[in-house]
Length: 60
Image 1 (cartoon, one colour):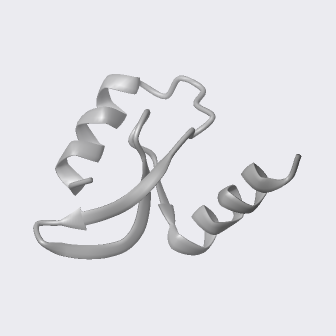
Image 2: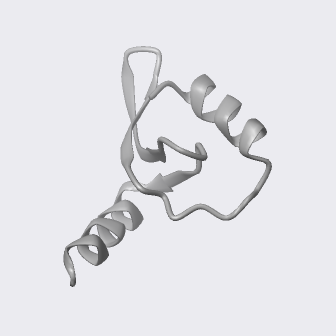
């Protein structure tokens, strides 16, 4: 997801609670930023923090 699209989603979401159902790579133009972005609310997470979300999803 582009940095600008993530910013639009954050503005629209207005800080409501979000479970961050899916994280995708963040891009600035054609370059990866190294961060991950929630497709629902636009929150940005460092890659290491995003990995911890993924581990929690796998734990029943």
